[in-house]
Amino acid sequence: MKRLLGLFRQRGGRDCGGCRHFEDNPHRIERMLPNLSVLGSAHASVAFGSGICVLHDTYQSDRFGCEDWVAAAMGAARGR
Amino acid sequence: MTPGAADGVPAHASPDRAWLAEDWWAAIVGLGVVVAAIVAFASGDSLNWFAVTPRVWSTVQDLIDQFAGDAGRYLALGGVLLTVFAAAARLMGQRPVRFAAGFVGVYLVSIVILTASAWDNSRHLNLETPLIALVLGLLLANTVRLPDWLESSLRVEFYIKIGVVLLGATLPLPVIVLAGPIAILQASLASVVTFLVIYNVARFLDIDRRLAAMLAGGGSICGVSAIIAIAGAVRAKRQDISVATTMVIGWALVMIVLLPLLARAWYLSAGVGGAWIGTSEYADAAGFAAAQTFGGFARNGRIAGTPDQALWAYTLVKVVGRDMWIGVWAAALSLIAVTRWEPAESGRGVDLTQIWTRFPKFILGFVVASLLVTWASHGHSFADFDTVTRPRLMAPIDTLRNWAFTFSFLSIGASLRIRGLAPITGNAFLAFSIGVVVNLVLGFVLSAVVFESYWGSIAR
Image 1 (cartoon, rainbow over the protein chains, first blue to last red):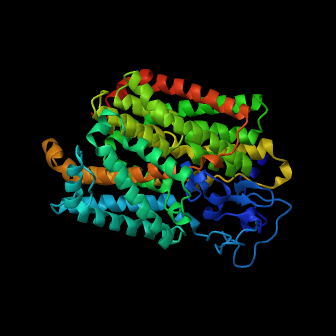
Image 2 (cartoon, rainbow over the protein chains, first blue to last red):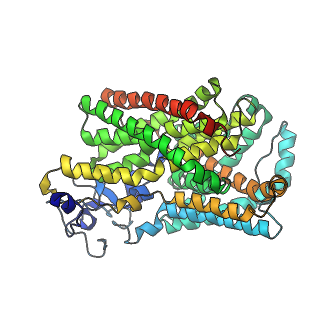
Image 3 (cartoon, rainbow over the protein chains, first blue to last red):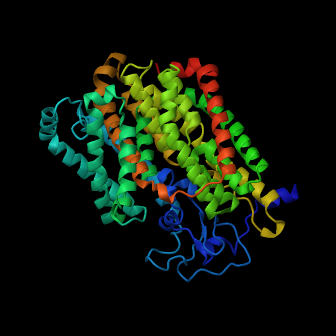
């Protein structure tokens, strides 16, 4: 139970939302995922908080993190 | 490619991106139209002058006379739509001038599409608006190189969400309240069973679990939107998203044609067919294309019921029954990914707030639109409804909804580059297609047998 509850606790700091390698601009995401906009949209609520890790070529929530985290440039990183 | 390097667009979205999401703007635009219609109605007027659309015609002279007489109305409607959509595009971070230039093209081609479907022979040939729009869009996208500025206005989801909000205005709130539980039950049964079938068959065929989850979500919940939500929750490979998207797009296009034909061949009534389409189609826009096509058969007397029943039943099952729960699915899969698929050291928690953040906000607009119009029309008698309320309040909203849907259907075809579709493996195709068959059969049983009496008489 403790482990289960621990899963829902916020783990902040070095997450993808603040990483230089993370692309969450919907316009660019749609360019990087061809045909996504045929029947979907990176601007939609369902896509909120997700983006592309250009380093690992994955699509994920901005709450992920990994050891390759690099701080985004000043002024570009998102706050919460 | 480093984010933000080449095109001058900021690398990261602003912190308040939630308020710029497409869903909210679709709800705002749609509700703006509804409020304007109510205000006009309450003051003894209507939006009918703006809500122009090609009327049935037989000869070229009919057409010339129509457009000569209504030229001012088409210009006014186009001007208002251009202004509103360009403003929304700007607030969503797009370049408004590029969008506006593109939208002029979308509007003009839509006039051609609506004119073609208004030709009296189109009805005999079953050439409904969605099919004409889709085919024309596909031809344009795959035979000529469309300029970037046109592509920026091909917003399938934005237009269809506006259309859904306007559809809500013509659906009485009591119907939504009463039908909601049945729609949710039917859709949930079909979604859970189909998801499990596709996922387990995919895993049996050694497909990566994340791809299996996306295929299963795309085939059971809501197409590409589900793929994106699940991909974000489980950290999917970018290439796998393209594979899953290709699968959904391919089958969604097939279903646009197949579902209405099958439903008609089996003499399903408008409401029953609409519910079946709502259970079996993958994406909202594709489903509306199928449902509107099927509703066209009712208008032509080929099936029992009314065109509205097909659209309403579809919307209740698909939007209320399936779309609403996408955040729940994403959270559930996120929990599974964290507890079973990833190393404990990944350091990632499960984010339950995504149940709300991923919730398709345009559904709120749909319900509010219904509430507003139900309230605005409640003081009128039943007799008044057909002679006053429907022609002066609902008819213009219907017409504008038809425009929004047409923009969306055209955008589907015009956005699709067949050569750009990702190659798919035989195993992925097999797993997904088995799910397609299961979903079709289950959806048919639920719509045409278990809940037939309900859908067959919806809103009557």
